[in-house]
Each structure stands twice: as C-alpha cells, then as structure tokens.
Length: 317
Image 1 (tube, helix red, strand yellow):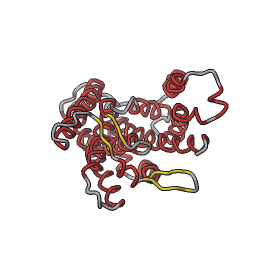
Image 2: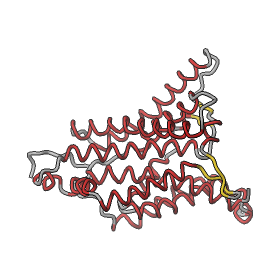
Image 3: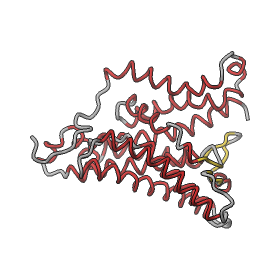
Image 4: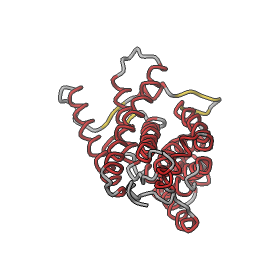
C-alpha cells in the first residue's frame, strides 16, 4: 500500500476516534459538567470491547462480533461515566479532580483486570496486560479498492450525523444546552437540571467508550493496556475546544488533528517526508504541538458554556 493510501487510512481512523470522544466531551460540557475523564472512559470502553472479542467463540459471525463489541464498549463507557456523574452532580465534587481521578483509576484498573484475565485463561502462564484479538480486528475490516476501511469508521460517520441532527433539531438537546448556560433559568421553566446533566455525561460515556475501542482496534490486532490510550482523550478535548463545542466544527477539527497524528505512523512510506532530516519522535510530537499552538491562538475567542464546572444548587439564584 502506498504512503498516501496509508495516510488516508490512518487519518480516517484517528478522525473517527477524535470525533466521537470530542462529541462526548461536548455533550457533557454543554450540560454543565466538565469531563476531563474522557481518557479513562476510553480505556474502560477499549478494555470491555477487547475482552468481548477475545471471549467470543471462533465460529461467531462477523455481525455478532461487531455488534457485541460495540455494545460492550458503549456500556462500559457509560458505566464508567456514572462515576463522574454521581460525584459531580449528586455530591458536587470538584469536576477537574474527579476527571483526573477517573483517568488514573482507568489505566491502573485495566492493567490489573487484564493481567488477572490472562492469568485465569492461561492457568498462570501469561501474566501480561496485553490482549490479542486478531479475529475480532479482522471482522471490522473491508476494502474499497486498495484502501482498507474499518466498520468503526462507518459507525463513527453515522453517529456524527445523528449527533448533528440531535444537537440542532431536538428539544432534549436544547434542554441540555440550557442547563449548561443557565441552569437556574432552565429549572424555573420545569427542566430537571440533574436529569439533563446525567444525560449529557452518559452520552459522553457512550461515545467515549466507542472511541476507546476504535483507537485500539481499528489499526491494531493487539494492545498493551498498561499504556492506556496514550493521551488520545486529552487530544479529543483540544479538538472539542477548537471546534467551539459545535459538532460540525468538531468534525473538521478532528480531521485536521488526525492528519498530524497520522504522520507519525506513515511518514516512512512518504518519500519526501522520509528524506527530511527529522526524527520520528518529532512526528510523534506533531499533534500535541499543534494542539498547544491552536489553543494558544484561539483560546481568547473560545466561548465555553457559561455554567460548565459549576455545581448546580437549586437554592441559588
């Protein structure tokens, strides 16, 4: 496969990841809850999906593998997001600290769980935090000409369209947005602020969990869970901010960031890039350098939801 085709393939994969996770962060923050735990939610979603692929019988159909893997990842993401919702909405905990705690918990918990999982399956012969899911990975692959595409990308594109329609055309989304802008005003017209914020955080868990399984599976057939998801959740937060908390702008921002992220994987196959006297480490740094520059130049014009990060107090006016 040529370097250009590889660049397109990886850009599509990373775009799918960043779009879903950034959309998840958008819905959470639009409801008024800062979700810095997207990285951890991705890890839990990736772990659940990978374990399902490993446990499914060898005669399982591709359709069964795809559906059960997606369901497991989405469910795990939603369950992990409940930790954030309960702590931040019911107990009014500091949202930044809770998100950081979930991120720290996720990688540690995934490492312990996968090591225990491998130990039991191998009768003590394998104590690694690595899962191999070659058959599960292959079930998601199809080709358009010479270009390898994953069904994950198709799912992400469908969910992007659904998110845009939901965000702009439904009363529920309007209520969620109202709770992120002025929850007291929303409450005064009968909107349940706590319920809307739960929905926002659960949507972030649903999309973040799917983003996690796409990240580890779309381009890989094995994953070491002690690496977490290598900062993809934080990159998605940068995409969300650059996209101004709007789904269509998030999509274009994700493609831009994904392009730079993909260069680190494929620059060896692109002649003029390989010829440049630049270390591969520099290409690995590109997406994070770009995110810092973009946020530095656009932060003054960013307009976050007014009530994000502020616990809702029913008695406050």
